[in-house]
Length: 542
Image (cartoon, rainbow, N blue to C red; front, side, top):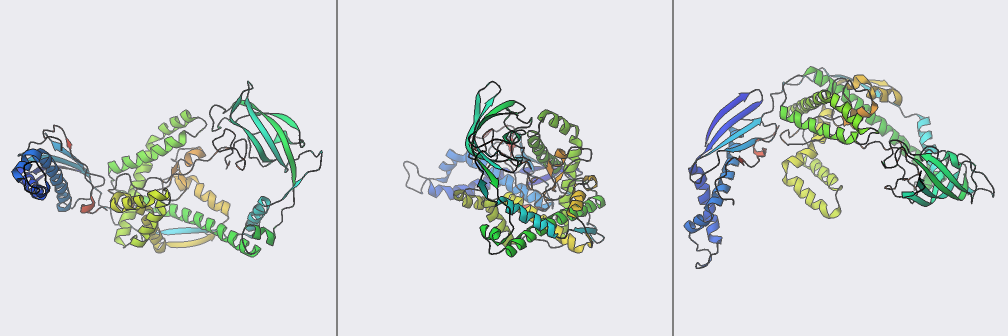
C-alpha cells in the first residue's frame, strides 16, 4: 500500500491510499482456499470444486469483499503509523470506482484531536458552600407525610364543603357548545379543595356544595394546556357530589412511621434527615463543579475539531427544538432560539474543549473506570429495557466500543472531577439552601459556557427567560473515547408539566384531557471506518 498526504491544515488531514491489485488478489486467494472446500456444485464431489471455477463464478464479489477488507486495514495502518488520533470517524471514499485486477485509489479525510496543553491544576481554588440540615426542614417533611396520611371523616348531613375538605364527585366535561369532549367524563374523583391540583376555578366553585348536590362549573382551560384543542377554551363540568369529608388532625407520631412501613418515628426522622443532607450535598457538588470547570475553561484555549463541535451543537439544538414544542408559543420560542444560535454554538465548542481537557487530565493521572464499574453501568442501563431485551442490549454494548464509551463517559468524567477536587485548595462556608440555589442559578454561574454532567441547565448569557435556562443540560463533550460519534449526548431533563384540571389519583388516565400533572483519546485499533463511497462502481454486487 502506498500513502500520500494531501492535506495537513490545522486539525484537518487528508491522504490518498493506493491499494495494489496484488494485495487484493492475495486476499482473494486466501478466501478462495477457505471457501472452495465448502462449496457444493453439480458434477463435483463435496469439497472438490476447483478453486478457479469458484473464482470464475464469484470473483467480482470476492474482489469487492477483499477490497473492503484491504481499505479497513489500510486506514488502521495509516492511523497507527502516523500516530493519528481521529476526532470522529474518518471519511473514506473510493476514487473513480474499482476494476478487478487493477489498483484501487482511496481518499481518506479526517479531523484529529489537538495536542492539549498540560492542564494547570496545581492552583485550583474552590469554595464549598455547605448547608446544615435544619430541624425545621425535617419537621416540614414530617408534616407533609402526616398530611398525606391524614384521615377523612364523613361530614354531617347538610354540611357545606369548605377549603381543606375532600369532595368526591362524578363529572362530565363539555365544550362551550355543549358537546362532551373525549376524556372529560369520570366517576368517584376525589378533589381536595385548596390543593391547587385542578385548572383555575374548578376547586373554588365546589366551596359550599353538599352531598347529593348537582352543579355546573364554568372554567377556562389554560393557554398552555397539553390538549391543544382545549387550550384557552371555555368549558363546563356537570358535577354530582357523591360525598363530602372533613380532614382529621395530622399527627406526627409513632403510628405515622409504622403506617409507612418503618419501625419508629426516630427511624423515619433519620431517613428524612439523610435524604435532605443528600440533596444538599448534590447542590454543593453542582456549585463546586461549575466553579471548577469555569477555572479550567478560563485557563485553557486551544483549537478543537469542528466536526466534534458540530455534532455537539446538533445535539444541543435538537433538545432545544424538543423543549420549544412544549412552550405556550412554540413559534416564538423557536424564533428566540434562532436569535441565539451563535451563543449555543459557543456552548458546544466549550463543551468539546472541556471534554478534551478532562480526558487529558484523567489520562495523565491514571484515572480509570474499572471493569467492575463498567459491568455495573451496563447492568443499570439494561434495566431500562424489557426483561427479554436486556441480555441483547448487554451483548451489544460489549461488542460496540462506541456504545460502551457512551456509557462510560459520564462516570469517567465524574471521577476526573473528584480527582480535581482532591487537588484543589477548598475553603468551606456555611450557607442556607436558598443561598446555594441562588448561587447555582446566578448569571455569573452561566456566563462562560456550560459544565459537565450536572443535572442543572444552562442558558446563553443573553437569554433572559427561565425556560431557556432549563433547555440544555450542563455537560461537556465526552471526556473519554472522543472518536465515538454522537457519544455523551446532553442528559435530557424532563420538561416541567403544566397544571391540569383534575388530580392523578383518580380513575382518569393521564392521556385524558382532564388528567392531572404536577405543577411543579482513541487508540488506533478502535477507529471505526465507514464503508467506502464508490463514485463509479464497476464490479458486480456481492
